[in-house]
Image: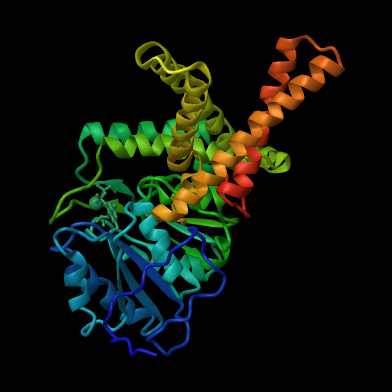
Length: 413
Ligand SMILES: Nc1nc2c(ncn2[C@@H]2O[C@H](COP(=O)(O)OP(=O)(O)O)[C@@H](O)[C@H]2O)c(=O)[nH]1
Ligand SMILES: [Mg+2]
């Protein structure tokens, strides 16, 4: 076994974004689990990192000495924030640092940090000092006194935003109202669902399939966690002194995407879909890809026949194959993206492609059999027979590909 330096970087958890009941055994620290793990996501915060670590360590050393850990999750910042953070470890032994290189994004950074965390209480705070550290102790007390979740809120007594422009205030409130209309059972539970400063009991999100996009990790926790009691503590979002905000228009689009995803997978609709146990969204994508394949098939067929002058049979087979390749690629990068992400490499992809190909070709044979059966034996009109056969084969293609090509044991809609 190799000996790992005490101030080496934390390894980045891989696989689904799920928090296990028991913390991971840490390779280089022999100690009991700590009470509280606070994740600090950073991206280009080199000038803030020392100050935030210093302030938080001082605060927590006074209230729960040795019973906490600070986990900086840096997304491989070009300003090398992770390196600055790492150099602080000797001085702040409760600090751990993760440098993520493959994935990016605030919400998933927080979940990756929690996955590596040892605490029974998990938390998140911005790394730019806009979240006042003192509020942390109030949040901690609330969870220790029984709350499943304690949220620092700008919209209760004592809360506010210090220097936001009218546009940002407007967008923030607009986003909240839209979310309330879309997902009242999630956003209606707290006064500031956009807050990025909160603590929760590990048990309340254990084994939930977290699937966050963008910035709003609290929505994910509220939507998928098992949360009864919620506490809120007011805070004023202060001005940034160093570095700059990473919020762009892209984050508003991500937010809409996130709302839609939560709408489809939580609450009544989510429960209905769970009972139905059919991956509807995936199936719709598969159908859309199939539809695109139809046009590819026809276009290639046209080129081969009219421009190249190839024979009918060859053109038919070749154009069908091009359509199959088209469909495979779209399905691989879109319909089944979440699965293919974990089976990287050209070889694995090629294997998926071969299976996809065989399954689709089997589908064609199946179609011929069904049409024959319906038309010749049962006397069904030939077009209706063809339509029934297509519907059946699309389902067949989808289901068998789901189970075999992109092998999936746990359907995470
Ligand atoms: N790891 C990680 N951290 C991020 C990312 N985007 C933003 N952050 C951090 O998340 C916190 C809040 O981001 P910020 O841009 O200040 O958002 P704002 O305060 O709402 O304007 C800061 O600590 C950022 O460094 C990201 O993609 N990955
Ligand atoms: Mg900020």
